[in-house]
Image 1 (cartoon, rainbow, N blue to C red):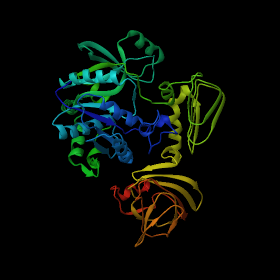
Image 2: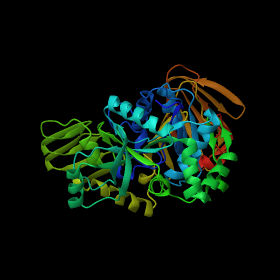
Image 3: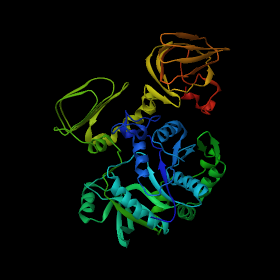
Image 4: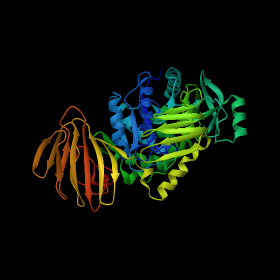
Length: 481
């Protein structure tokens, strides 16, 4: 391994629109357990823990996902981590730049192991060997990219052509190639010296910043200024928005890797997938005798080569072939499996029409727990609220609605105005319009209650926070209870 410490940098800024309706803007694919009980983010954390001499990870994400990232880091037992919050998305090159600055602040210098949060790697042993090989080259000043050994003539990925061998298992990059057509992809596969561009990297933090300053000086300066003017918010580091928005938006490939003379590639054959579509998810999983992946309560009759996912009710299929069917509480999506890359067009139409199904699920996760909307009408709505043990909602009030809480499991500590009391199962409380109130779970088991809201306006932005243990600003109130 390199003489420098290895610091994982996990890029978690995407929204995974091609995996709609499971993946949504406020609950994207990297945090969803799409492959068993662990999310892709948690699998990425497990992958980096398998690397020798690895330090605590640096996660780069946006503020809407910060509590999900923190909760999954804690659940995975990861220590000494940092979460950097991007005020706006500027693609991967600026995200890696601020992570490099954080790594230097912590370690003096370090080899950065840059990984997207939403990829799948099945063979951890092969990944560990490739990471060790790459870290040695990175410690010598090379910018390492992992090139996935292709298994098929894929047109959905960019390619890397290897040049001469630098050392065993490390090759100079001859050129980067954009996504090819089918005939060209077949030629690349037959040639044997082309790899899929995985978007995973290894390099010294100082070397990356040097290269970025040489090729994108405006970006490097804006990122440094945003980092130097950063503020701390509980477990999070907020980059300065005024400086960060000045950074050009660009990927690391275009900003640095395709322009440097220090790029090398380490081949990787480790069962990699970017899980970028329903077809990719279908390919990544074990299939039944009919070549299907069936998740949830699915009854499949004469169904072949399909992906069917049920989350809230029975889904039955008959005489189906090569299709994807995904059911959630508020949406059903049906498409040919081969066209699942185009699901993002549905999301674009939903956003254009202002539909909430592009942004949130009926069940919305919060740092204190979650709430699920059960029913909505013109002047009332009903929610199921779950509060984790020891957690609490903010002290708040509403200008346009009153609320009625009924405890169905656990114990609630409820504050309404100057009065605080405990409620057990089957007990209830009324919160008048304009009254200051807070909900807490002082117990050892999750608190569950039914909330009935009534009033002239029921939007989530009718929240005035007076105190909040999670440091949320009033500007967060549009989407957070």
